Length: 268
Image (cartoon, rainbow, N blue to C red; front, side):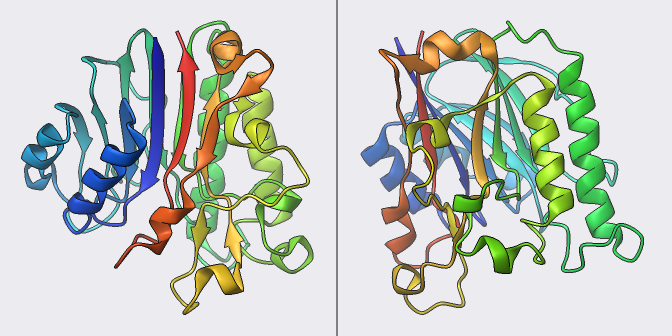
């Protein structure tokens, strides 16, 4: 069977329920992992997702901010999150679908100043990465695991519009690149979208609202990721190819999120 996993920072699920329905209709994900749902559990538009054909839902909501959710076409099993946010934010939710554990994260953006001492938000971000990396090191790499979500780091030179200029900007600073690299190496995770679109091709999933025409300016970042454990290598790489992509046309829709959805397929 094919299991298509999507991740999308929707930037308010209630505002974008109709867009979610359109995306689900066009891209046919089996599992939709969402970040920044910006609602409490009871405010989540369950009926809209049930109508989309994604009736199995797990939510970690929070009033006004943050919040993550997973909606699935297939039945889900509860599973613990790999970690919890030290600030008590709703940033982690996890399920098992068709035997695959899916951990969905909204990692802190980190504020504007890349200094752990002067900026507690940046320290929170790096602490989140360090804690998650330590948790992954304790896991069996042969177990089928997906780590996904808005991880808020663009890890490669071609994951940002300008490597040189972005090295001083939070999301692509050296400390963050080291943190992301440590996360990948914790259990040799496979970066599925980048495997599907190899370097040196540029690959972005986020574009600022500040640009009137995001395609013309194209100052994007790849902040949204689908990472697979080595135990999923044969499911993710079929005949030497990976099926994964950024659905950047969604960013063209009326009143879009600043993030585009990303999908990856597993053959189970």
